[in-house]
Amino acid sequence: MAEPTKSWLPRTGQVTSYVTGDDGYYQAGNPLTTRFVDNGNGTITDRATGLTWVKDMTDCGAAFYTGGVLVTFSWSQAVAACVALEYAGLTDWRLPNVLEQVSLVSMGANPNVPAGIVSPADAIYWTSTTDAANTAYAHRVTADRLNVSIDAKTTNTFYARPVRGGDDAALRVAPGYPADDTVTNGVVFGMTGVEYEGTRPKNIIITGKVVTIR
Image (cartoon, rainbow, N blue to C red; front, side, top):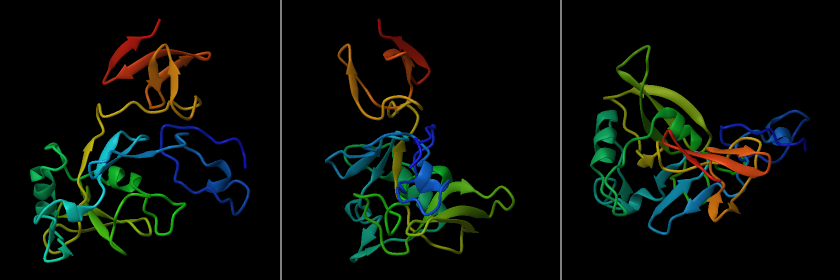
């Protein structure tokens, strides 16, 4: 394998190389070795994006799971259900946008669902992103075999996986720097936004504010 190529984007999770120069060869992306963290309250946090996800929608009450079956929604219903959700003591849930939903994959797994996430076989999820060419349609994502498409908002029903965070939810690993938590001057690093000067942390940027470590 080549030296991993670091970037702000998450790695896909594919670690097997089938030909020199493919995804498994470079494993390009955010170099976190431990990406998904179980919060112990029915949620899981992606340290590469700062997003927190509901692990299993069967725990989300009758709006998402009723009669032993996961509920499917029209697009507007999916948006409303996620916004109305109160779960794990939190009330700021929402329907993820298309890039957020796409980020919740592991191309090294079969199906392409990260460990800890419970998803029905062949599950299709709505995203909050409307199609720019036809606003009667919205983007949706098939989780098992990552596939992004569009469908009519009112005539199709799909699942909805609530998400929260993504603005000030977490620090993440900066490209080209240590891959996991490092303790320096009593501060734990390992999430994006850490700026280094040599081997010493220089700045931590949190929601646009800079904290200088001297």
